[in-house]
Image (cartoon, rainbow, N blue to C red):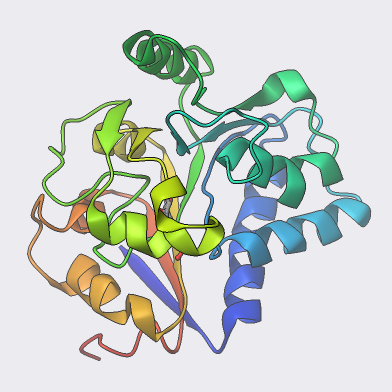
Length: 242
Ligand code: GLP
């Protein structure tokens, strides 16, 4: 596991964009795994900037990590809406190459299987971008999720519901469930970048990088991945033993 410490959020975002660009230079039809949340917004802004300067997404395929279950894809708090607003509408990726779990699927089990099969049919993910929850969740895989899990319908913890309530009018509006790629689905990516910024993530980051590998700390599984880079700002790196 590699750890890069950036001086601030802007540098963290640029370093991540550099790695995405390097991949697209060597593999213009790469498969990217993407994340939502406030953390990767700077990376997406940077990618939009580089697209304006010539970076081509016409052959790229993307798979998003997760989506709230029970929200229409057009709901302004859906992850589908987030991704179109922050990235897809601003780059030249064809709509049919964008994949996000359907949070309005009538049969969530079937949707999970369809999603997992589609990732496999695309040849797997070349580079997966991750954020991290305050409890070290990745995607919506909360503490206790088996490392062998694949895409599934998951329940959000009260802590995550509270953390994500800031985007909704009131806490009761936050969906209680989500469709999330599993830990195994994430670990099958050929490379992984986890982004974290701000002091609020420092504890989760230290546990993930330097604590024991345990299902109680979902991001600790990344210690077992052969090609994983954590890109942190100074504040998120504060609790690391250096
Ligand atoms: C959500 C998402 C995660 C994300 C996490 C952190 O729960 N499902 O993929 O990493 O929140 O969000 P933020 O980047 O806003 O701190």
